[in-house]
Length: 134
Image 1 (cartoon, rainbow, N blue to C red):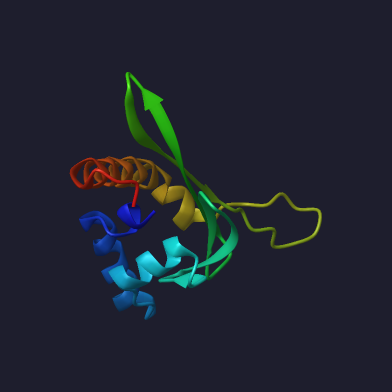
Image 2 (tube, rainbow, N blue to C red):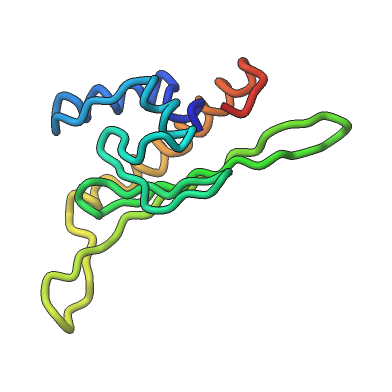
C-alpha cells in the first residue's frame, strides 16, 4: 500500500490537498498507514482495515478508496496483485428525493476514471522496480 501512496502521481495529489484543503501528508505517514500505525492520511481516514486491505473515506464522507494486496503465484514466480476500488457517494438532500452526485462530481467522473488507471499504472511500476509488495 505504501507503493500506491508514494508514487509521483499520488504525491502530486497530496501536494494539491496540502495547498487546497490544508491536509498535508508525508511518505513516512504512508508507511505508517500501511503498517496500521495511524488511521488518518491526507484527506482520508480509515473506515475498515484487515491485514491485507484497507478502506478509506474522505473527510467529507463523499468518496471511498479500497486497496487490497494479495500474493499471486504464477509460472513459478511469486508476485503481488493490487486490487483497487473507488466510489463516489451521492448525497440525499431531502427525504424521499433521489440522491444525486452533484455537478462537480458528475463533471469530473471521466477524469477520475483516467486518473485511477494512471495511479494503478504508477503503483505497478513502483512495485515492479522495488520487487516487493510495499
